[in-house]
Length: 289
Image (cartoon, rainbow, N blue to C red; front, side, top):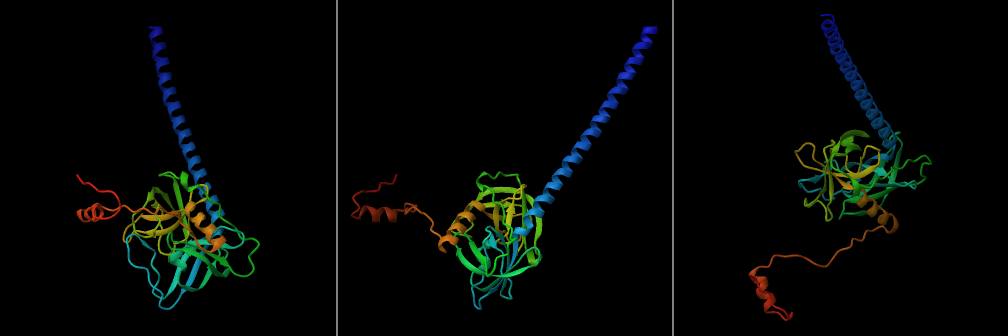
């Protein structure tokens, strides 16, 4: 009888010990999760504060009678009706060079940028490439000695699901920060530019974000925001920074861009084309099963 009571007591002690340990483990896990969330939040604040100064708000006065952007889906952010283009840009060089979108600054007679600290500078057009929708502008006059430059990532290693942070000047609300993820890479076939290989993101971007950077969780630029799907939500597109940097380097160096191409075009073999080839002097015949 005495041993039976002892066994019962031991079992009760073990049960209480189990629940106590489980409760403590849960508390530790909750504390760990809270610490991880706090660390993640602090990282976002850190990279955002470090990168915001490298982003500029752009105000460009359009030439009278300059062509408006056609309505396409997806489409570049539309130009306001008062012939004032608003957009964004990112500083990539201590000499005052800024990358933005061609559709923001094309056909302009004056360009002004505003830094995060509210300093304003006139800019000149260095060059643009409609084929990729990339342009480079440069601060005129004395370049501020404290001008910050953005850190660029390797967009070729970008993975779907990574954190994406967009900074820009949507609707004139300068240096607005939004966050999402990389939704897809290699998007093409929109007819927006000759060379398309867009990064897709659900980070909120709006008219005025054009030319602003898309960042990774380390605060490095992975893309240049350029287009949205009209009427949709969470469907934004950015030009990979690898493309933007390559084009920008050529524009800074020569003022123009050369794109390699192969002189081959694929077409459907119709009976008419087959007949034309077979009656030509090309030296071969085309048989169609």
